[in-house]
Image (tube, rainbow, N blue to C red; front, side, top):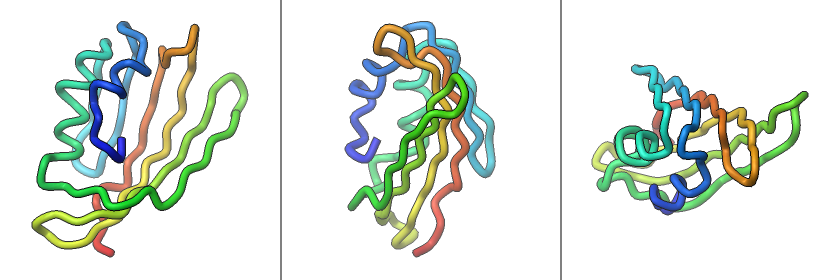
Length: 109
């Protein structure tokens, strides 16, 4: 995500992934890895958004899911920002088949 390598993100997802996310102004849904990689992620991180560093990363298990939390620092035309996302995922055969994401949105830093 920090590298905005959406093709690599697509490879981590099952082709029929059940994906839902909530950002400050919109909810997102996709039922394919292609939909996530081509229709959602590029709208979250545009070309003008420069990700400078991964600030934090955590992963642990919760019941039958994995919880992942991460935050980035960067800048764009509006100035410096931080963004944090929390995700719950289910993996099968090395790919994510189910994913729910909650995003803080770009916050000034």
